[in-house]
Amino acid sequence: MDYLVFLLGCLAPAVSCYPSGQVAASCESLEPRHSGLPPQGHPAPFRITALRRKHNLGEEVTVDLQAPGSNAFVGFLLQARVSGGSDPVGSFRLTTNDAQLLNCSRKPNSAVSHTSASPKTSIQVIWTSGSSQEPIEFRAAFVRNYWTFWVDVVSPTLTLAERSTFSSTAAERRPTVKCRSPPESLLQSISSDDCGVTKVCFRHPSHCDPRVGAGCYFMSATMLSGRHTAVRYEMTGTSDGYIAFGFSDDLTMGNDDIYVCGKASDGLLRLQHAFSTGRERPLILPLGNISDVRTSMRDGVISCSFISFNPVSTLRNTAFNTSYHLMFAYGPSSNGQMGFHTSTLTSANKVHIAVPQMVTIAGWPHIIKAHGALMVMAWMSSGWLGMLVARYLRGVAKGHHVLGKQVWFLVHVAVMAVTVVSTATAFILPFIHARTWSGGVHPVLGCLLMALCLLQLTLALLRCGPHHALRFLFNCCHALLAAVMKVLAVAAIFTGLKLIDSTESQWLLKVMGGLLGWELLCYVVLDVNLKCKLPRSGDMTAPQLQYTSSFFPKGVVQGHPPRKQSERSLKKNREAAREYRKRRKVYVRDLEKRAEQLENENLALKEELKSWKICPEKVK
Image (tube, one colour):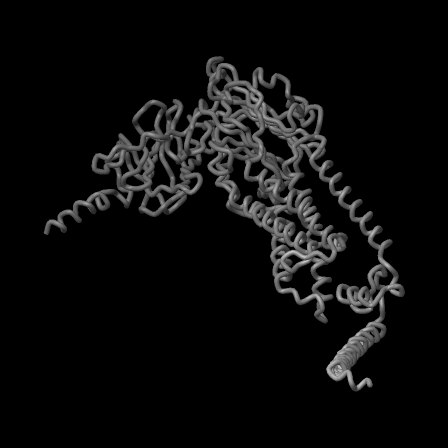
């Protein structure tokens, strides 16, 4: 019985809430009656947004309740109130079956609530204003579960549309929408002037000026005087799709408040407000309280500027007076849909947009630097040395063996083992850092290289003996795979350096190009030297011919590259090779019989000599 009472006590909170949304008793306080539990004290991860900033009397306004990211709410209660008041104003109209109308303060359809406890990420309703000319705020309560809920979540203020006559005070207090300037004036207005003096500037390369050069990616934020919540943003950069900047609590994408300026499906530039959820396409939000939007695209350079009254919201923080990491990204778009960004720039430290300063771009993480260093060491050092030893240095320490193996072979195996281990380690590090597929050419080249490394290692472990009839097949495949892997590695290194080299001169690519040129020169000189030292096929001794035939395909002599042959010639060469092997076997068998015969004759002579030494009188 005691267990039953305890179980009922645990289940009581779960059944005492209002999953049907009939919460008229909470109209005044907007607070759910969950057994006296207090609401959350931190900012709510949900938003109330009106699709317009101003309205006329009797005009309909679309209102959105949204849960950015992976959050969801199961219950809500929405009202429109005069700013600072407690009574609902206007009336609502539904556009979804997940909401229902309520009568609060005896006013019909003056509130909206949920109809079930199912998870919701977006609710849209239509509100019609009444006769009040005061500023309006939309207030709501959101319920995530029985123990977690927020009350008094407020939207930006909705004001009555300005008429032809109004006071100068009101005009100063309310944002105005200016006419768009022509592209030329917008391009000239975005510059690095006053960076660090009156505005926050974030640019790449450092010290570039968007008004002077087209290769400058630039973003600035200026707090407008007398308005502590109004910020003028500017951004410009070269792109064939979109440019974007955002605010983040950390150095990685996800839960970021961003603004995107890109091509719409009609080919015109549009400004969008969005919320980044990580590697997926950002969630598009209502533009909110934005004014003075100006856009232009000229010679592939996208430029946008606007004034925003929206607070910055990254779920963890929702305010103007909070510091964030700045992010700048650009990439392609298709039919108005954003594609994966081509590049991303992030500030090294958190930035307060109300404090004018020059923002420093964050460097690459140490784990990515280790990835690049291991790949360069593997394929521009140890891998290169292993190929040189196998091709050109077989004669070094000839006749000396260690552990029953030739010295050149042990050196080749050692340095190539270092190459494979370094490549495998470098391959794993980016996945540990990103934990997802990043896209682009560089990771594709890296995956192909890693697959060929494993294939090369498997073939080397399963190779046949040096004098096997099919040894030449292994030699050809081994050499071909090594050449393909070298090409892929060089391509991966160059594409990786292009991603991380942010300098105008691209000096990293130039240095790597010089190192690659030095390697090619070494290959050419050593190859010429090898061919000059090797004797002609007519001058080769039998052991040289035997070694050559074991390393190269039959009918191909080292120092003489094979020519293109017809099928008939190839058939003759194969028959000649079979005949040669057959005759060699017969010759070896004859030599063995002759050696055995000579050994028997030698034994007979020794016996006869012994008998003569025992019986010397026979000589007399």
